[in-house]
Image (cartoon, rainbow, N blue to C red; front, top):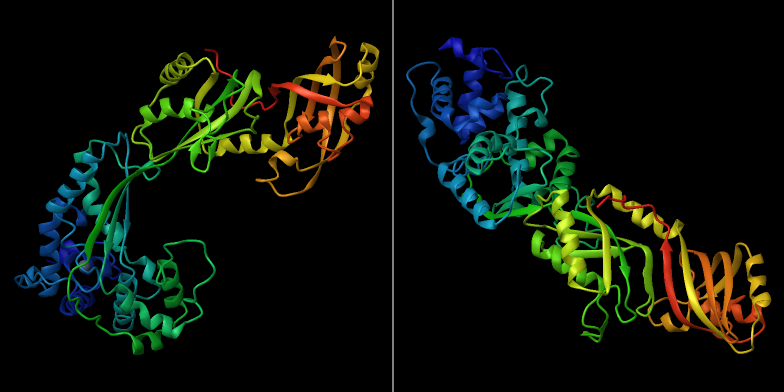
Length: 502
Ligand SMILES: [Zn+2]
């Protein structure tokens, strides 16, 4: 009997102490795995399915002081420290349930990650047992904290991990984008934690938060309250041993989830009747489709996401064309069921989108990381945009008149929020730069204007002046009424996403 003990990584090497600690743990109602946890065993194989019988035997032997095992642990009462999570939910039946759930979810994945949500009262119960152990076996638990005891969560994974990996046919990976979430709940969890909020009302005071699912007894709150409670008070206000649970913890939910996938590209828009995003007026679509819908429909079909979120580096008006190399955009596919696409698949998706419409053309479609999308947001403020417009003037302008425009470099404008967007933007006055400007006569009352501006400049308002709300404006500069007939974006100078040679 003595020999196997010394292969263990218990907190003590003293056989007698270990036997006494085991006896205490079994007698108060811990399950085999919890006994082993509290003794300090961290070697995974003790918690594996194929080792379960010998683990039980080991604990039995420790309990009976090396004499013939009494099989005390065969009692099927819910464990007082794991509430049955290491009993009922470390079973073939339960892993079978997880596997069938994952398989029927329809996700395609090459690695997986398992995350557990456990009842918070486990922390409270464990702390009570820990304090008692430390008091009774001070030498064994000297320098050992609550956190040094292998957690229920870890032990559950040590048991179930290999079974799940084998059944799902993919390895476990801590950084896997695919996650199986398992939530355990215990009916009386909140009630068991309530003594802590009596002791520390400040920790449990509800703060202003936008979160809807705000929990009073979160893991963080409870752990903080426990660490702020003096041991002697904890022992006085909380039971030792913790009361036997009236029922087992339950598995509330098994759900699968995949991290968002980000797809970037650039788009041209050749229509003056197409908006960038669905244009809704009182819930009714103004146009049949939009740039966003034309792109997202194809991607949604492949990735099968929960949601498709489109964003672009700025936007043009419905009646403005987007020419040149296009405008960068990024699409977040939230919780996609499929994501294992290769560069050649993106080429195919791009071709599919481009052949489905004459109104837009996309290029450089590629997968990007979450970190990279900040490029798009930063570019929105920094970038320069080039425009070309067909304008009208009341008086006849000569090419010599128009040539004076080229002398303006970094012309400073003061623009009040245009009247046409006042219903959705706050009234403000902004300073914007026109980096360069030039005009080319078409006929006596028409000319083509080429501009390069700072992002966020309202070009239409610069031309007609918006009833004097943009100063200076083309009408004041040319000393005649001017208006804009057609506008095209020629380039959005954001060097992202990278160009692809396709
Ligand atoms: Zn247990």
